[in-house]
Length: 412
Image (cartoon, rainbow, N blue to C red):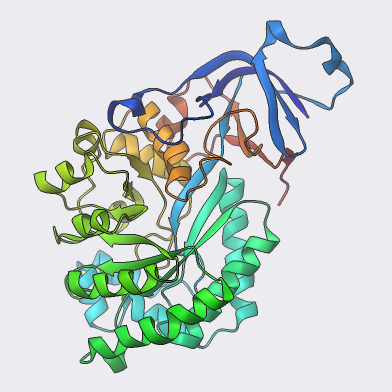
C-alpha cells in the first residue's frame, strides 16, 4: 500500500531512537507533504511527495490529502480483562466516597475479583475482545494487559490465558503482566504472608511454566502491598525471568518508585504523588515513569507532575489504565488531551509519551512507536486537520479516520 499526499507524517524518529527522556520529548519530527510505502506488514519507505518513485503507479494507493499520519498509540498499562463494569460505585464516588473507602467497604478490586471468579474464560475473552476492538478503532496499535482481578491461583491463570487468546486473535503486539499482588483477598486479610507465599510458591512457577506473562507487577501502596512485601514478590519473579513493573505512588509518596528503580523495573506507573527525591531518582534511570491521567480525572486525585519529571530528565510515557473501577475508558486520544490540559505537556511531549515512550514501556521499541523503515506498519490516519495540536485540542471527539495494522486497513 502507498499512502500519498500526507499533510504531515508524524513521529519520524531515527530507527535507533528507542525512547526520549527529558527535553528530548520536545522533539517530534514531522515530514510535510509526504508519501509512505507499506510492504509485507512493515514500513518500507517514505519521503516528500517530490521524491515519489515512478514505479509507485502500480501500487494500491490511499490519498491522505489534508490528513496527518501518526504511529499507533502504544498503551502500556491496561486492565481490560474483567467480568463486569462497576457503575454501581459511580454514585458513591459522586457522593464523595474515596477510592480507599469504597475498597474498604468491599468494593473496588475485591468487587471485580468476586465477579471474575464466577466468569468463564470464554465470557472474559468475549467481553475483553469488544473493549479491545474499540481501543484499536481509537488508534491503539500495541498494549499491555494485566491480571489482578483473579486473586486466586485458578482465576489469575484464567485471566492470563485470556490475554494469551487475545494475543492470538488480534493483529497487534500485546504484553501480559502478572498482577496477583493487586489486593489481598478477604481470606488473607489478616495473613499477608500466606497470600504472598501463594503467589511466590504456587502462582509464579505455574505462570512461568506456561509462559503466560512477560512482567510481574504489584500495587505497592499503603493498605495494599508494602515495600517489603513487594520486594519479596519481585525477587521471586526475577528467578523466573519476569521483569518488574510497579503501581507506584498513586495515593502516597511511598518509596515504591525507588524500589522499582532498585529492581530495574521496566516502568513505575501512576506517580500521582511525587516529591523531589522521586524526581531525582528517575533523572538518570532507564525506568520509565508511566503516567495515567484518566485515572486522576475519574477518581479526582492529583494529576502527576509531568513537567517536573521532564525537567528532571525522566523518561515519561502516557497510558490509559483502562479498568472497571478507576478508569473505565481506553481512549488514548483523550489521554493525550489530558496530558496537555491537565499535565501541562505540550502536544509534542504528549504524543511522544503515548507512542515511542509507550512502546519502550512494553519493550516494543524495535517494532512500534515511531515512523521508521522496518517497523510494523501500525498507523492511524486522521480526518483533515489544521495542525498537529488540533488532535489533543479537540478532546472528546475522535480525529481518527482510518486505522492501519500490519499494513492493512483495520475494519474491526
